[in-house]
Length: 380
Image 1 (cartoon, rainbow, N blue to C red):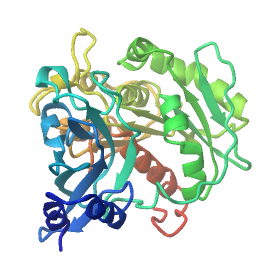
Image 2 (image 1 turned 135 degrees about the horizontal axis):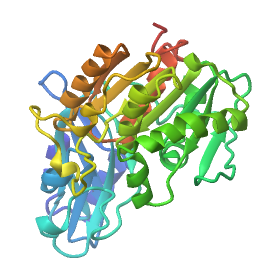
Image 3 (image 1 turned 180 degrees about the vertical axis):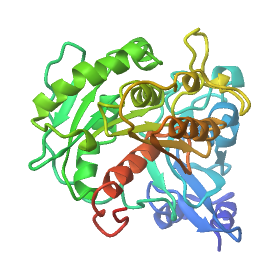
Image 4 (image 1 turned 30 degrees about the vertical axis):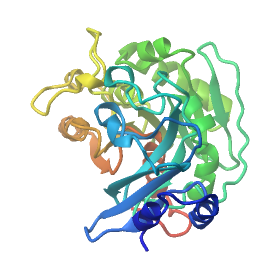
């Protein structure tokens, strides 16, 4: 009997049958089934809720934004069972969260369906989902060693640093709070990357400050290269040479990464730009909904001009569910190569999703030097 058959059988079921159903399904996990279509799986999300009038299951770029109604779950009548069936790429990695409403689901103009959208009730905690063919499928479950993280005072806001023993590589990050407190990057690196990596991650105190710093501010890129990087070397005690000095930025931070590659290439041997916000423009007033079409030239591309400096390695990543972003990322890589940089653009199956960025960054750090533990990837 398929899961759909079992859900149908619950119509008019008594309490005993309901308890038997919940006892038989994986607690808290969606049910994943192969389909007859290569490269896809059927994923059924289940939620137990007695009092909700509507429940939404949010997945980045799958059931959010203009697609948010596709995330509304169906209730088995007169039960506490809510379900949503989606056919998804078998190599997708994403995060999902539930949002329960005590009234009818809101109108389109009031709800974007994003797990972080402030409208309506707060979502449940985001859960990582790696489908069967996703890279590093055990990233969320593998044992992670403890790594000491410090939060030294800085004149520029909150920072996090790590200094593993024998580290010879230094990774500088934007959006430190996300990387350290949500994504637990130091422990993940310790679990998956053979060679220790020291981290210096800076954060912005407010959303407005983040937009001002990372939104294409060439002065901030220069600050990272000329001021924060020397501070990071001193604070971590890892005075890595240029070839072992990395910078990674995501979303708006991806713009900063590209500016560093073009204007301060002598500072970092490797720059990682993940899902850069190619919609951004200094004129202001734009949002991610203003993503440029494939025949347009994003502002950030115009900044990738010849400048004095050493060529650097630039790794660009973008999700296949991010609209025109992969096209513009590929174009940016071509422009950087024309300037003499070693630039590559690599897509991942997913949306604008930190969980995908984490996998791509871990893989880049591992394959750039030494094999991954467990034989997942090997040095190039």
